[in-house]
Length: 135
Image (cartoon, rainbow, N blue to C red; front, side, top):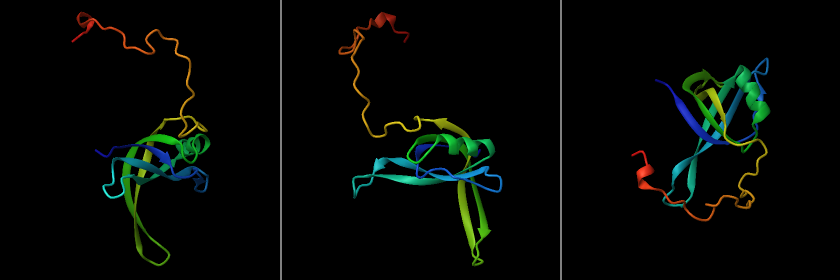
C-alpha cells in the first residue's frame, strides 16, 4: 500500500506550470515531533508535492506561503537525465486529497483575541456523576 498523509506549512506560493497551467509543484515544511539535542530547536522535513488538474488550480487559488495544509496522497519516485546527461532521481508526494487546516490570510502566530466567557463553567470544571459515565 502506498499512502502518505502530512500536515505542514507551504514554503512558498503555489504556481501553476505545464502547457495548460494544470500542474502545481510545491514544498510543504513538516515539523518533526522532537527537538534536536544540540540546538534545542524543532527540525522540519521539506516534502516535495505535485498536484494535477483541478486540484492544482484549487491549490493555487486558495493557498499561499505559510498556510497550514493537510495532504493525502501517494509517494512517487522517478528519474530523468538533466542537460549535462546526468541521471537525476526525484521523489514527490502526488496529491490525492487536500485539507484546509486554516483560512487563507489568518493571523498566524498571533493569539486569538480573548472573548468574554458566557458559560457558567468557564472558570471551573463541571461536576460529573460517575454513575452517568458509559464505562
